[in-house]
Length: 53
Image 1: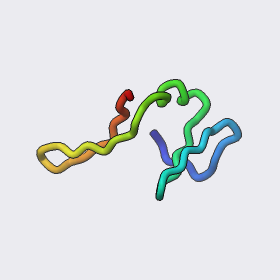
Image 2: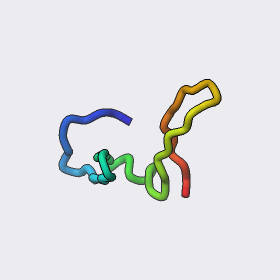
Image 3: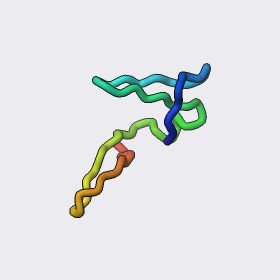
């Protein structure tokens, strides 16, 4: 995962209420049928995880 300034020619754009995700052409097979979730640990730290649906 990386932060990008602009969309590339082959990127797919997925928008939610307040976020825009750019998915590169070579990354698409890895994120198909997945859900991005934010999970907090017992200690209060959090991280993003891709979950298969």
